[in-house]
Length: 120
Image 1 (tube, rainbow, N blue to C red):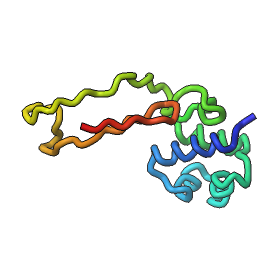
Image 2: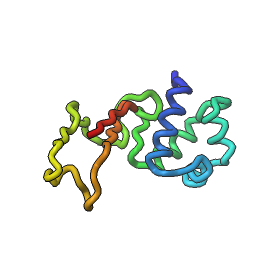
Image 3: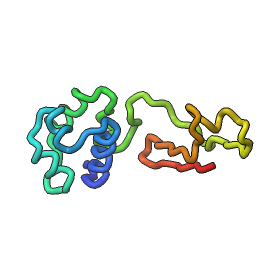
């Protein structure tokens, strides 16, 4: 059975990843905007047709991940490294700058929905 709270969290992750609002996401998969709203609020559970529309439109969404969290998102993404990146305190280190801008922090999003934040 699908845990609706965890499902909505994964659905929001897909929407955020593709930079879509609820209405933009609804338009993209061809459902009414109220359908997305009702699912995100927990009022309705997703239908099989709804799930299939998502996986048909977004090839990077694994149906097993969407339904129960098994697998990865985006689909086929390898596991991320377990050790955080290291930063040097040296101002001469070219790795601490990109385009002349100094890096202040890096946020890594893992496939299990967690994230890590690394600050210099």
